[in-house]
Amino acid sequence: MRLVSLTCSNTEIVWALGALDWLVGVDSNSDFPPEVAQIPRVGPDLQIDLDKVEALRPDLVLASLSVPGMERVVEGLKKRRMPHRVLDPQTLQDVYADIERVARWLGVEQQGRYVVQAMQQQIAQARGSLPRWVRPPRVMVEWWPRPMIAAGRDSWVTQMLEALGAQNAFAHLPVRSKPLTQAEVEEAQPDLITVSWCGAKKLRPEVVLRRALNVPALRHGQVFALEEAYLGRPGPRLAEGVKKLAELLRNVPVWQYGASP
Image (cartoon, rainbow, N blue to C red):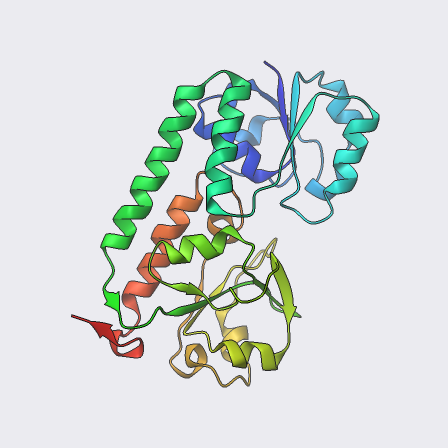
């Protein structure tokens, strides 16, 4: 089968399913695993060159709506009548379902079940490494610094944190992500902030630490860089992202959250 992937997350799903050799084209941002460097590029996710995609004669194009603005690319695939499937996950459970769905499309159902089970086991192990808190630590996952944009309720980040006994500081906002005012951040009172800027070449926690915000995360210096690749790509590496979140939470002073024995 000749596959073209238009987002990093789709590329990583194909890799986890053991079908990397079937990829004949990927978007310009796909960077994992390293072997994808040898695969022809079809452009950035929001500026996919559909002529290049069509020239690759794909049996299936894996698109996604997890990147805002991808609707235009999907519409272009429809107009050209190229065989394609669209993933649009919001929750962690949606990500599991998408992995198994892609596995069915590729005829590797058993591998899809294995990948999901492995993710769930890794997440359970990460939870077992943490203390039991009197209240859940509130975490802000920041996608962009100016304006401050963070993950809201309708993001898989919410379930990733809940799996660890923590809480998305903006789980009360019924959105995938949202630009935030200073007042909104102070009202949420995050205990920990991850600098997970999408598409940024360098993550700079010091930018966040210099903000004049009255929140526990800044008062106690609990601001850390955590690559968007582990939090923002709805695929198999989210399990590793949960593990990295657990490492950050484990190193935060226990007294900050009032952990129980």
